[in-house]
Image 1: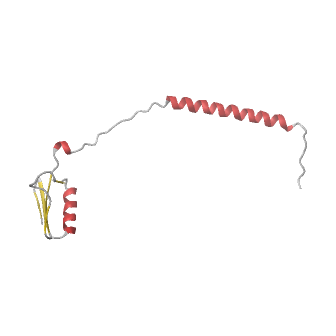
Image 2 (image 1 turned 135 degrees about the vertical axis):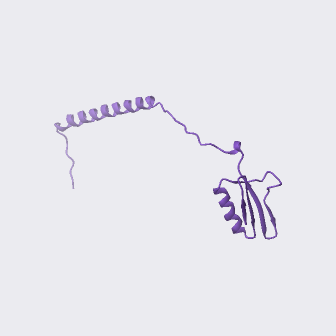
Image 3 (image 1 turned 90 degrees about the horizontal axis):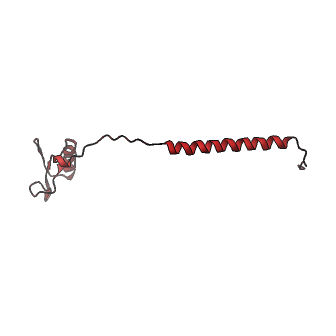
Amino acid sequence: MQVTNEEKFSVDAYSFVDVLQAVQKGVQQGFVLDVETNENYPQQWGTRYLLTMVRPKAEEVKKVQEMTVKIDASAVQEVVDKAVAEVKEMVEKVEQVEQGTKGKPGRKTKQG
């Protein structure tokens, strides 16, 4: 059995599964377990489960805030630009070496 009003959601059940389903329903409706007061503390008497869920206090409600993050990537861009320039320079040197070695005679290896 579940009793609901604006501030409290009471559960009185004889099955653990029924208790879990009721707690899930209470959470979906915005209630929380109150384990700080004797009045609403969950209890079990034999196979009977009693608990009362309450609305969270205003200070307990966590608000999601939008946050904007700005990243200064200028230092990263400088490193990338320097690396690209170095790679281009190395490619040019490799091309020069390749062009310079094409016309020179050399020993050919025997294949066998």
